[in-house]
Image 1 (cartoon, rainbow, N blue to C red):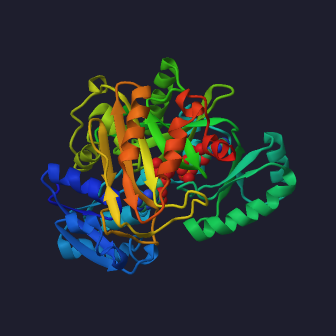
Image 2: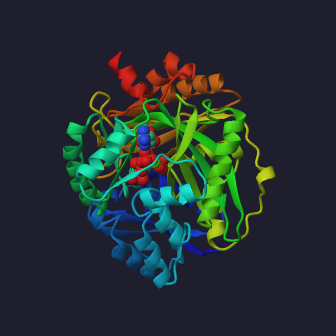
Amino acid sequence: MFKKVLIANRGEIAIRVMRSCRELGIDSVSIHSTADENSLHVKMADESVCIGPPPSPQSYLNIQAIMSAVEITGADAIHPGYGFLSESTELAEMCKKYGVSFIGPHIEALDMMGDKIRSKKIAKNANVPILEAIEVKEYGASLESKVQELGFPVLVKASAGGGGKGMQIVHKLSELQAIVKKLEREAEAAFGDKTLFIEKYIETPRHIEVQILADKHGKILHLGERDCSVQRNYQKVIEESPSLALTDSERANICADAIKLCQAVKYDSVGTVEFIYDMKDKKYYFMEMNTRIQVEHPVTEERCKIDLIGEQIKVATGQKLEISQDDIEFNNHVIECRINAEDPNTFAPSPGKIDHYHRPGGMGVRVDDFIYSGYQVPPFYDSMISKVIVSAPDRNKCITRMKRALKETIVGGIKTNIDLHLRILDSEEFKTNNFSTNLIKELLKK
Ligand code: ADP
Ligand code: ADP
Ligand code: MG
């Protein structure tokens, strides 16, 4: 087992990883930028190293500084959390070079699945359904005719994109060139890779993903699906499990396909295979794989009562998975609401000082957060400040319990999206399972 894990992240996920480390008897080192000196992940860690000034490229994305922190503290492994360097082959390679374990999949899997075009090819070869992608190599008549054949609307996406960034709908041919040029510039700036592709835009989709847990000995398990269809600007807002969009046989098929894809790359860690489900023709297509722990992993943890990060750490040391597919039990309905510090009207981040914080509690309520009364939310990072995860015997009870938990929550001094969550939970569309990823857009029009 590792002795000391350096957590190359911040906020709630850094704390979440620390908890699993402690339960496994592992010391944890956190890192922080100068903007995060008073952050709870720093206070909670056994030790913390300042790795740079506030902007992420100089701190949480600064591989050299992070490797120095590993050296100084004698950590024997790095957990990258999500976001930041979690899918970075450069960090994984650096770890290999310096004899430090990277808590994630092997580098080839990271590499193959990190690129959306490549991962689609692998999925296709493994007989997992995909939406055909037109790679944008050179803009010209040949590309335009291929896109016309596909039929509008289409979605232009950055192959290296993530976090809902780097994609845009195109409704007609006359708009295509300008959008491609703009996205190429944006993708180059944000991901250092301007490669784009174009696929059919599904107009009433659900986002359904399958949680995978695998070890280095060829065992690959699924932990069921999550439905993450409540989104804003292609970013998840509410996640739940099970998904009411699937029949039992569709659920069995989508989970089997997720495993098939992971077998194709000899996947050996936790990961998520994301699918888009077309409600019109009731078909699902592989979208991308996230080769890391995800924001919404607690939904599955609460359903299956398995510590996903604990398992991720254990398999990274080479341990065999003790559980088998048949041991996994799926109980309760679970919903997660992501609480963001943001303006309810413009959705712009709303950093500032939290003058009062009251966390919800009671039966079936889990809160993964990192804020406290007096905490100053810095303006430099993601706006998510807390996740409220609620379990109950069925979906209706789960919705009622989530509403009660959110109404108990007080985050004073800054703006949050709590009222938006309540509005979604109260909507007929959500309650009756009659919605697609367009739900928030449609609610805001009312
Ligand atoms: P996931 O794929 O884990 O469900 P999303 O697709 O919504 O999550 O996007 C999560 C992304 O948002 C991360 O990959 C990261 O870029 C960013 N992100 C969100 N919250 C945080 C956070 N607390 N720390 C770092 N990055 C974050
Ligand atoms: P990211 O890497 O940013 O998570 P994804 O490829 O997972 O990018 O897409 C993010 C979200 O965008 C999906 O959850 C889905 O809601 C929407 N989306 C992606 N592809 C399509 C598509 N072809 N048609 C409609 N919506 C899509
Ligand atoms: Mg995604």
